[in-house]
Image (cartoon, one colour):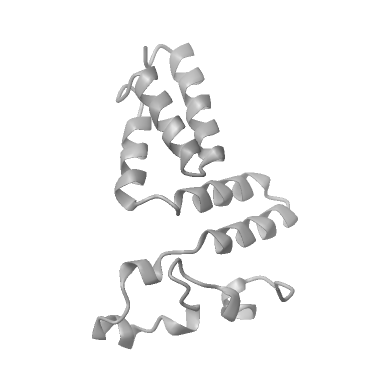
Length: 132
């Protein structure tokens, strides 16, 4: 792989790909209008998010790097699943058991960092009396 320079969209466009493998240059408004580009063609590839995380970390922003890495994990899940996870994590929306089930689902799907965040939420919500 070629050396990466930031921002990816300007310096490494050929390396920026969607989840279906389309390069950023292949995603045009004309193709969207023609219906030859799908939403999956425009979905960010987890590798792109991981590269962005490397830049964030090198730039001294480890929190952003962690968020981008979690985003890379979530990119492997459907939009419906991500919305379901988000809704379940709102305080008072789920029981401990339901959140543990979500954490297990995340782990099984490759979302280890996201699962750890759910476990952390369980700890804090329980301590604050927001779930039981």
